[in-house]
Image (cartoon, rainbow over all chains, first blue to last red; front, top):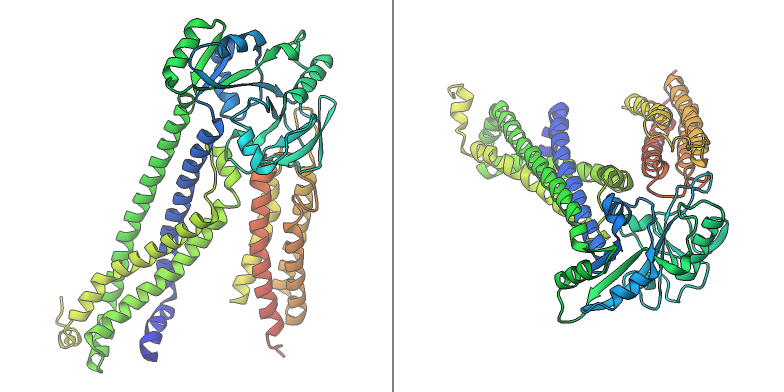
Length: 402
Length: 133
C-alpha cells in the first residue's frame, strides 16, 4: 500500500519541471473558473440588490432631469447632482387615480470638504410616507432619525457617532448601512428637516445653483407604487398625460441598460472561461499522453516485476489527482486573493453594480472549482491510464511497438 | 532553495516599493492641488518597503546564517507593520471606492502577506543552517 502511495509522488518529484507545468496549468484553470464565477455571481447579486433598493415601480422627476441623462447617472451610477420641482406637482401626482404608495425625496450634492473627501449624494426622505429607504435603514438603525442625524452608505469611511459637516452644518452619523453594491453605498440619507437645513445653508453660502430656492416648497423626485388593480403602465401613462412639467419613468426601464451591460459582461466572462478550459483540457490531455508514452518502458518493467494492470492505471490516476489537488488549491487561493481584496477596484473598473456573494456561496463556489480541477485532471489522465493498463510489456521491452 | 526564496523576497519587497509609487499608488492631487492623507500612507509604505528591500538584500549577501535569520525576522515584522499602514496607522480617504482604498490598500496587504510568509521561511532556513567553516 505504501508503495502505491509513494510511487506517484516519487514520479512527480522526479520530473519537477513537468510537474510544475502541469500544476501551473491546473492552477490557471481553477483561477479562471473561480474568479470568473465570483465576478459573474457578484454582478448578478449587484443587479438584484439595485432592483431591491430602488424599491418603487415608478419614479416621477422634473422633465428637465430626464433630458440630459443626468437622472440615471445620479440614481444608478452614483454621480452627485440635484434637481427640484415645485411641491404643488407632488399634490397633483398624488391626486391621480391608481397612485398607491407615494413618497417624495430631496436630493443635494455635498461640496467637497477639503481633504480626503469627495462630494457625496445626500438623499432626504420623508419618514412618514417613505417605503423605499426606511425598510433597509431599519436593518441598521431601528429608531426614527432625529434632526441632523444621518445614515451613511457602506463605502463611506464614517462610523456611528462621527460628525460630518455639510455646508457648515454638523450632522451626526446615526447608522451605517450594509453593503448594497450599488451607488447607494456612497450616499448619505437623512430626513426632510435635515436636508432642508442643508439646502438652506448651501443657498446662504451661495454654493448652490438655485439661488432663490425655498427648500420647503420643492421636492426632487416622487416615488410611487401603483394601487391594487392598476398596472405600472397605466399609472405612468396617466401621469405623463395629465401632469405637466414632470416625467414618470418605470424604474425597471432605468435599469434595463445596466441589465444589458451585465448580460454582456457575463457572456464574455463565460466564453473566456470556456475557452481557457477547453485549451487547458486539451493541453492536460496531451501532457498526460506524452508523459505516459515517454514512460512506457518504466511501466513495462513495473508490469514484469509483478504490478497488476489496475495498479499501473492507479499510478497514473493518482499522479493526475495529486496534480489536480495541488493545482486546484493554488489556483483557488490565487483567485480569492485577487477577487476578494480588489473587489472595489473591479467594481469601479466595470462601472456596474457589484456585490460579493455571501460567505456560504463563496465557499460553495471554491469547493466546486476545486472539484472541477480534480475531476478534469482525472478525466484527462483516464485515457492514458486505460492505455497503460492495456500495454504488453513484452512488446514494449523488445522495442517493437510503434 | 533558500537562495531562490530570498531572491523572491527581494523581488516582492522591491515590487512593493516601486509599485506603491508607480502602479497601485494612492489618490492623485485634488483639483485644488492638495495631497490627501492617503499620500502620507503611500510614502510610509514606500519607505518601509525600501527598508525591507535593503534587509532582503543583506540577507542574500550575508554568510552568517544567524544574523541573516535575524534580518529575516525583522523583515517579517516590518511587513506586518506595513500591512497596517493604509487605513489603520495612517488615515485614508473618505470613500471605499476611492483609489487608495480600492487599489493601494489591498495591493499593499497582499504584498505584505507574501513578504511575511517568505521572510519567515527564509529566516527559519537561515537560522537553522549549519555554519560553514
